Length: 106
Image 1: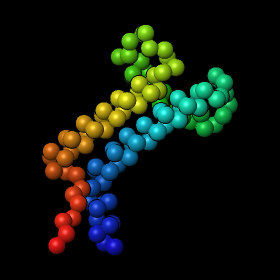
Image 2: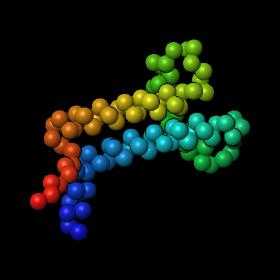
Image 3: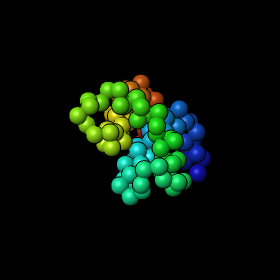
Image 4: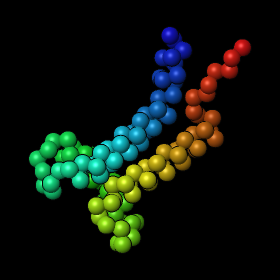
């Protein structure tokens, strides 16, 4: 069991940002999908927290997104950029040898 603990704590610098990227991604998708169900200005606490967690990212993506894209589609556009950032993060960490490796059998 020590090996399972080591792979988490030894690579915390990799796992923590990776976790943040996934939380952002799924929160953006949830915000987009809930936007079809809940009315604007809703008191739904889940939707309000999704907005609170992602408003800063939506504002940054709004600056670089062409105006021909409707504002309602900014969450999936932001989710795309989160995926790109996550892949770049993984590639940089992998090239630096800082990602967890699978144990070779034998």
